[in-house]
Image (cartoon, rainbow, N blue to C red; front, side):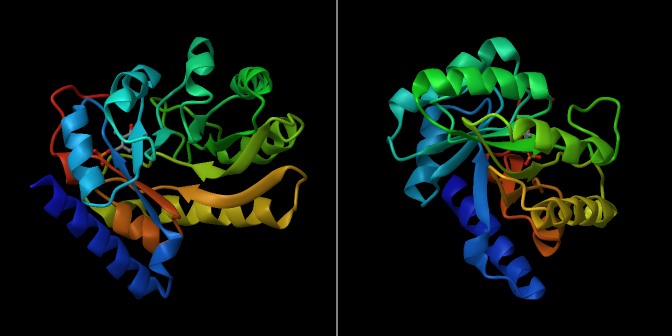
Length: 231
Ligand SMILES: *Cc1c(COP(=O)(O)O)cnc(C)c1O
């Protein structure tokens, strides 16, 4: 059952927190519901889940009217500038900002909505060709550039670690992103908070929590395999 799987993943997060001497309330579990129907989302909601991740704005728009209003929708997939209009106001947090140009579009749309849009910058820590995101070397300059947009609120960093068979293989990646996160935080850049570190998926979320994740994004581990492979 989905509810049972959700509770098991949460228990594993809590156990990873205990091993790392962290408070479990520091780690938000985002249930990644992409390609899955609203009925399945509702099962997780009834089990206590309030944070859901989608990688297409269209899926948020399709599912959200069928579901309770207190759900927080996280935009975790690559966002094209022509989809920004729909994302701002629908998503509570955009995890996947990978260019200053995209942030500029978000700024324009946030002005129109009269809000400050919370975002994370996506970092391609391993430098994989197939992935979006800033390189580790580029991130600080990007944070400084984007911090000039008054309606965009940088809250932290996100990464999609490489697909590996052993979670331990990604420990270094998570450590590196945590270090970058701490370094940037210590610079106290105006208009930047650096309190959110989004890393870890079904295959490696426990290691990510041990290395400082404050949000993990788990899809398969809760909803089962997806028919269509995305990203
Ligand atoms: C699909 C997806 C996830 C969840 O992946 P699982 O391996 O199914 O847990 C997490 N983050 C992003 C950005 C995704 O696209």
